Image (cartoon, rainbow, N blue to C red; front, top):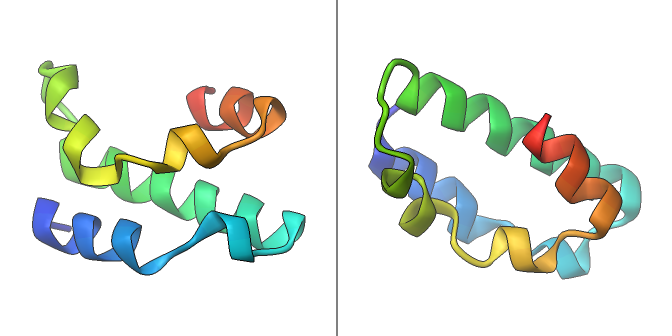
Amino acid sequence: MTADKLRAYAQSVDLSKLSAIRAARAIRELADKLEQTFAGRTAEGERGPVCSGWFEEMTEDEKGTFVE
């Protein structure tokens, strides 16, 4: 998984148009892709631009699940 592929995935999904179940799946998939892409890297700032907008669209429950 490259940062470009991760960015493309993040931009292809509009959480506001998904059901709660599909949004949860998409968030889990994004978290998995982030882990694959940035495993071992310490610069947290590298993750932000890749999936900007997602965190703002998540509900509080979704944010908690994502952070875990």
